[in-house]
Amino acid sequence: MRGFVFILFIVLLLSSIHNYGYAYSGGSYTTPDSWSKHYNANGVKYSMNGLDLGDKGTLRLGLTTRLDLKISEITDIGVYQYFRGSLTDFELGSGTMRINLNLRGGWVNNPRPSGVDQWAYFDATRLGMNPYDVDLRIYQANVILEDVIPITDIALGRIYLSEFESYKIDGIDIGVNPSEYFDMNIFYGLPVTYYSSLLATQVAGATVDIPISNSGTRIRGNFSYFFQYDNKLPETFVGKFRVDQTIPWTTIYAEGIIINNANIFDAGFDLLVDISRSELSGYIMGQVGRNADDSVNPYVSLYENMFGASSEYIMGGFLFTQGIIDTIMVGFGFEARYNIQENYASRDYYRVFANIDLVDLLWKNNFVSIIFDWYDVPAYGRQEANQELLAGFKMTQVINDKIELWAGFNVMNYQYKNNPIKFYAADAEGMVGTLNAYGEVEHFDNTAIAYIGGMYRITDWCLIQLDYMFDYADILKQYNTRPDAHMVELWVNFLW
Image (cartoon, rainbow, N blue to C red; front, side):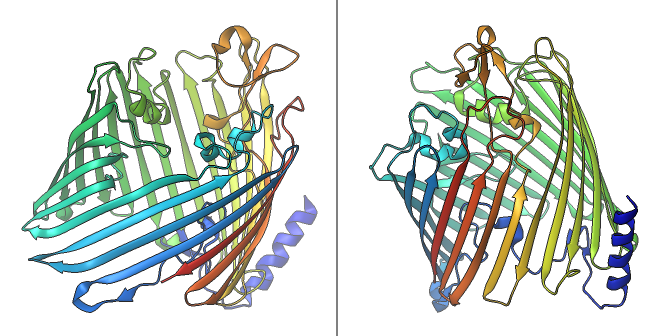
């Protein structure tokens, strides 16, 4: 403990005699890099540049080739080709037109190795692919007309609705905004998941957005109705209502969601004090009522599970962050969940987590984040108690405007909703998994990955990225049912 205090004192002393930029800036970190994107698909700092076509708009094109090699008990090779394109600000009538296209072709030699069920968790996008076949996915393909018809925006094609709806559809979205205090959208189409279209389901709905800027109030409401051609799937309605209120230093929100018989609530606040570089946020959410099995449309069920609508519960937590000096930020948080009807899949728990972020402290253009996470999941029935302290870090070094390097040990994938819960065979009811010697169905998710990588911008229109990852499998596993895995990824990005 004394050694830690001494090191912290030296760090503070050294930083006090240097003139660095602030680590704290309006509740966010001032970093020179794109560290938060490094561990995501297509995680490149630059996406598309833009070619100015005058009154014909701006054309942006991106072509990315991705090669990956996974080495474990079985070797897997993947080749992916991405294309992203957009035409913006094309003058049409009294308004403008936008065209967007985002698609991907994929080829793998072994998408689902037999006998290694846990590989599905390592890369779930492979589940819908066949060996050696080209798998084409259209992420986005639409035309958007903005004010071509006065006070009206129209989107046609495969579109993402607003974040408030959280849907992607093949259809139409019509927005009417007669004033700065009222926006309304109506939409209709076929829901689309990340993997495929649900041809048997249709959705229609409307969203109203009322921003009252003078009082800092924003009111939003949405109603969506899911129905089928042949009535084989259950009809489902989803209603949402949300109020955001901004007052000096603080933002408060309250949201309610109804999915058939499930009623979900969420409320919280964010207090930001710039003068002291302090931020405190908190929330409470839960559910009253639940839907019976197979009573909700399969598409809605994806979001129902995200909202926690599989069981009745209440949970809450807080996060406090403090900028100490110009280059250091510390954070501390707490979260807990209580299930009204606890079961093997939804157990009570609480967690304590903390982070220390260093910006431009060790070297110029350097960012380091050290992470701590402690969980306590009490025993339930035959389920043993689970207590674990997890630690990790992320580090990025910007060499210049063309080169970035990064490394880390990632434990942030371990969250309660992805907790590797063990189901007993009698309770599993056909769930995917592997029976161990104790008659339990093992479920694992990625919880510990060590990685190192870099990015090199060769020219203004060409960028390459190379990553190496070592999957430690699950930190908490008691049985050796999942092998460790190595993966190398190469991204070659052409940007116009």
